[in-house]
Picture 1 (cartoon, rainbow, N blue to C red):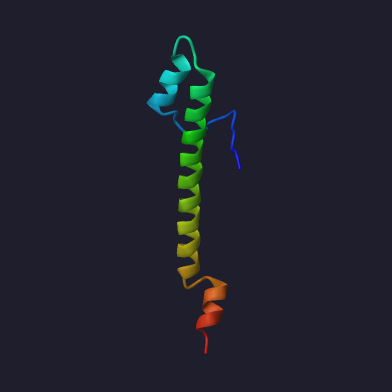
Picture 2 (cartoon, rainbow, N blue to C red):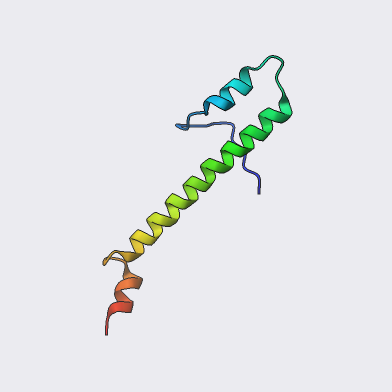
Length: 72
């Protein structure tokens, strides 16, 4: 699945991507490939973080499904 965003919010563009955007003449194919590469890197990092937080929250004693399983 392809991810595209017009707004980067608080994410900083990597120097490599900034240089490709400022290149004269610009190479649209290279720019698109770099954008895709860095977008996938960020999405992967976000998914890993979300998965890790989800695991930590399920390990918490206040998690109702976990608490129900630990009861005799």
